[in-house]
Image 1 (cartoon, rainbow, N blue to C red):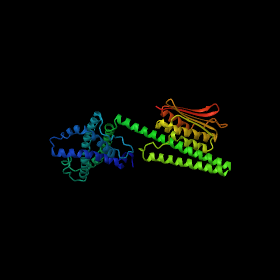
Image 2: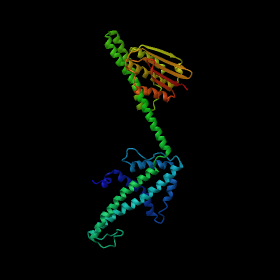
Image 3: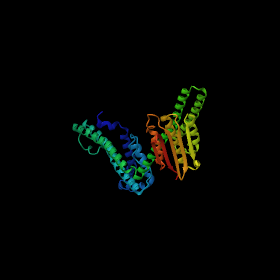
Image 4: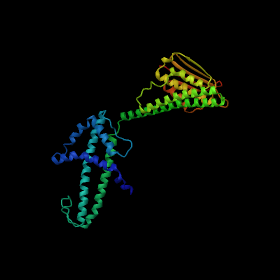
Length: 384
């Protein structure tokens, strides 16, 4: 089908005409009853448009009838919050009524004129058809048939596009609504990033320990050591499953509180898990961990977990020194491990980036890199 005729196959072409017909119906009835005062219904538009809820109703109608083939609506579906929005609604109602009356006249009389022209071309008189009823039949009236059909097509498509463009301009989101939508979108992206970090840190830690334990057990060829390794893998896997269930619960129920996430109070379990994997861990924990604010404590736990995971993953079961200190309004986390031979550090992938992002979000600082033959992760988080 030629491109110019494709709008005839789009359902939205006809829903736009329906949108205009619905508008014209009450005014047409009024004009039929009171033809001497056709302008009176226009006076209703001002008080009607100033009602905040009207804008919401108009936005919903526009989305359903004017842009039903679009995935994302460009129309606001919120009540008028400012006087500017209210007057935009008044103007929209006036534009809608004007275009509706034009559409009604065109879609009513153009088909009648088309039929009358065809009837006169076949030698009949067009009784009751304005402009044609007094004319004499003639074959030349057949030339008017395509003219009226083109005008009908142009009216249906053109006025539909025009009313949609006006709706986008007058019923589109206000700057405040656009800002609110942007903030919601930003929050969603931040939440997705946080969940991705949670999965990376928790599942990555569990898999790293499982791989290290399995390799050590196979190399040791000692039944007792193998039993201990399997026990450590089981415990780490169980913890990872709990974390996975919690994260999936957040995805299913976004309002679920985050209080169930592990904090630095649970650091002993994390340190024991690392020791069970074969790491010679020298841990120093000082200060009242239970006084650390929830967000700082939760992110501190994940930073410690990711640092231990990096040490296992990139350096193997090497001696690790971990220091957790709460003092002077600051949480200090420092993890050091010898650099493996021929390795400059544990990479610079999403793990280290996640550590820096967590620290930055809390107003802290994170430093990672080689230091005196060790790989060092040092993070300072303010408690205020």
